[in-house]
Each structure stands twice: as structure tokens, then as C-alpha cells.
Image (cartoon, rainbow over all chains, first blue to last red; front, side):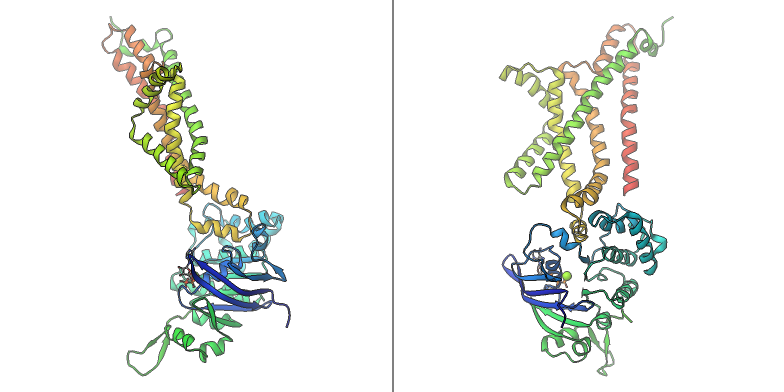
Length: 262
Length: 223
Ligand SMILES: Nc1ncnc2c1ncn2[C@@H]1O[C@H](COP(=O)(O)OP(=O)(O)OP(=O)(O)O)[C@@H](O)[C@H]1O
Ligand SMILES: [Mg+2]
């Protein structure tokens, strides 16, 4: 097997002496999409934040393309230039037009020429259906549009890997799929991604591999077919049941709560 | 026939004298605003430094300026320090000290508020883009802080301009004092006082109004 693009080895992280991550390891191959699921508070966000250095690990190591990136305090920004991240909250910079949001990283952090990036940005906006919003202010955009711009902003850095932390959790339901379809498009284009989501249908559609995290451990790991249809552990089975409802007519039919990703 | 009261303002150099007085006020106010902004920035950084003594110090400072009438502080510095330490501070310098003491704390609190009102994930998403710490401040945090701060800072500035009228009480010849001198010269003219004060009122209005217009427009534009 090829050298993984990202390698996480036995990382531990506690806040105020409560262990949030208690020995988490994972490898991601180039072009692979992994989805991380698990109950609220199990440490999914913390895991992603440790990967791009927003949190420092207590122990364990993280490697990106063969370079150790954990445990450093200087030059963290260089590491982050290669790791894209999009969060749950809409975090476009409100005082800048969409285009300036998109140009900031490539021109200031990477020092690329403005015109070149701008042309590329327009092409990407076109691809996500937002060409006509290129020079609008973020506050005139809907939540779904903002998150699509945030995805473009991260992609324009041409990162080695993209981390997505519940990017549709704050959206109205009808906007969820417009964002997730962009993610699926990126996955088809070969983007390496680590995705945290509560949208199980989407997870199944996009994942090459699913990791189930609970109490700071990877409890189960497998292909989406196995994980969603034949979960091996009792805890994963319980977790997946929490996304279904018993039918009112009590025929034992179960209906998924989330329809996104269809 | 007796002249209308307003005409006394155009006799000799009376109007220029009033404007001269206004300049004394404005010069003091502008110096105060400038110094308060610089010291206010230090105040805000101290307050946000996370050190307990620094926070306590700033809190105490802010409370004192908020409770204490400015006039008391003026007397304390102008008369009190002169006696106590044998300093012979002139009125304008005393006023600059007192108003800056007040303005720096108020401005510092505004700056602190503006800085802390910017959500944490603004910093984080800028950092996630791979910007350096300095770039995060330069492109993301400072522009947003200034936008939040400017309308409030302008309002504070108009308050400072108004409050400088108090220096009349410590023998600084500013616009109000000049007005009283003019009224004194024309004590035979019964409506002199009205017109002189009315013109001073207009002068203050003309100085402060553009500021508050600007503040309101900025507030709307950046809302
Ligand atoms: N900065 C912090 N300081 C203290 N505790 C924290 C901090 N960040 C996270 N935690 C705690 O760590 C635990 C894991 O948080 P985390 O955000 O990683 O969970 P999560 O799996 O992303 O949950 P959710 O699905 O609700 O987003 C939680 O109990 C949380 O309260
Ligand atoms: Mg989370």
C-alpha cells in the first residue's frame, strides 16, 4: 500500500483532565474520503482540530505526506496551508466580498498572483453555481451559499487534504443537499477528505471508509456497506438506531430521519 | 436707536475672539482624543492580557472615571497637585491630563469590547487558511474591530468635545469664557447674553453634528 497522505498515531487529548481523545489512530490514502461519525461530544471536532493544529495533542503523532506536523509550535501556518478546513458556523469574513474572501489565502498566504487566482476562483464559483455572487457581500448570501463559498475558499488553497466539520449542521434542511452535492463533486474529483457529519445518507454515499468514534476511541471502522448495513459492534448498532424511527403503524419498518445526499 | 443684540458679535474682533476660544476647546479635545486612543489601545491590551493584576488595575481605573465628576478631577489636579507637589500646572495641561485619564479608560473599554465581540471562529478560519498570526490581525481582526469601534469612538469624541467646556472653571479662556467676557463688555445690552450663548450653541452644534452624522452613517453601512 502506498504511503498514506495523512497518518495519525495514537493521539491523546484532554481538556481539564477529561480525556477526549484516548489513543486515536487513522491513515488516509491519497484520494480517499473517510467519514467520521459518533455521538455528540465523542471528540470528532477535537480530532479534526488536532490535525490542523487548532488544538495541540498531548501525546501521539500526526504526519502529513511523511512530514511530522504534530507537536510543533512554530510555522504552524505552513502546515495549515496544506490542510483545508470548513466549519459548521458560517465563517466567511463579513467585511470582505466573496471574491476577497476567496483571494485572501492564495494571494497573502501563498503569494500567488491575484489575476491568476481570480480567474480560477470564478471557474470554481461557476462550478458550485455561484458565479453571479462573486462580488457580493457574505451577508447577502443564504447559509447554503455561504458554505459553498467556504468550500471554494478552502479548495483554492489546493490543499493536500480537506477537513469538513459538520458543514451542514447549521443549515435549513432544504439547503443541505446543495452543499453536500458540492462535496460529492469534490470527492469524485479525487479530493482527499476527512468528513464529520450527522447526515447518514450522505455519509454512505460519499465515504470510502467510515470510522465510528466513541469515548475517544475508534470503536469500529469499515466500508460504508458494512458499517451502515451490518455494523459489527453493539455500540455502532445502537448509534445507527438513533437515526431511525419506528413506524406509527408498528410494522417494524424503519424510516431514516435524514434525506440529504439522495 | 439701540442695536439688536446679535450685532455685538460683529463689532470689532468679537467673532474672531469667539472662534479663537472655540479653537482652544477643539485643540484640547483633539489632543485628548489622540492621546486617549493611543493609551486606550494599551488599556485594552492590558485588560485582555489575562493577568489578574492588570485586569484589576483597569477595572479600578474605569470605575473611578465613571463615578467621579470630571470637574472634581480637574480641581484635584489643577489646585490639589499644585499645592501638594508644588507643581505649577497650567489649566490646559491639567485639563489634558484629566481628560486623557478619563478618555483613555473609556476608549480602552470600547476597544476591548470591539475586539472581544469578534467571534472566535473568525480567527480560527483565518488561521485554517494558513495565514500567519500577523496576517490574521491585519486582514481579518483589525478591520472588523475598527468597523465596530468607529461609530462608538466618534460618539465618545463628541462627548469629549462637549466636556472640554469645563476647563473654563480652571481659568482656561475657551469659547465660553470668551463669550462671558464679551457679554461683560456689553452689560448695557440686555439681550447680549442670549445672542452670545446662542451663537456658542450654534458653534458647538456645527462642530459636533458632522461627527454624529458620520457615526450614524458608518453604523448603517457596516451594520
Ligand atoms: N476548548 C475546550 N475546552 C474544554 N472542553 C472542550 C473543548 N473543546 C471540546 N471540549 C470537550 O471535549 C468533548 C469533545 O468535544 P468535540 O467538540 O470534539 O465533540 P464532537 O464529537 O465534535 O461533538 P458534536 O457532535 O456535538 O460536535 C466535549 O465534551 C467538549 O465539551
Ligand atoms: Mg463537533
